[in-house]
Image (cartoon, rainbow, N blue to C red; front, side):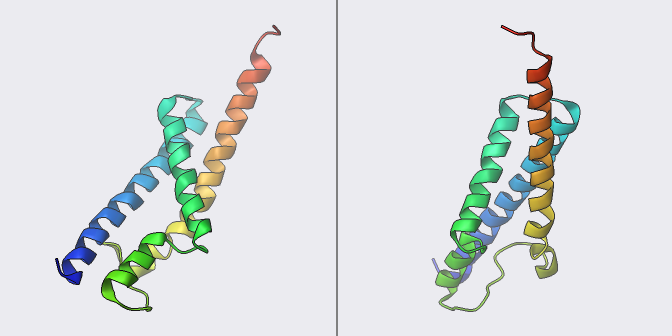
Length: 120
């Protein structure tokens, strides 16, 4: 497979990862607002944390960008998503605060539930 085909596959996978992350963020916010604590919430939180750890461990840059650069044989930035660059640059600044708000809401709901439980 040539580099163009590999980059096309990477773009498809990376775009799917971004949309899954956005869905997880929305679900976390929904659960925090609606006081819904279920296994999908915990999976969404774990997924978002895993993505965040990957970004932090790679110095704030997506590890898939490194892969895109390696595929194309360059040290320059390589478009690795099926979305405009201006939109791709807003992913972390928009979703990181939303993830934090969602996590705070969920923590508040857990605190409320614990306070309302009768003493053992």
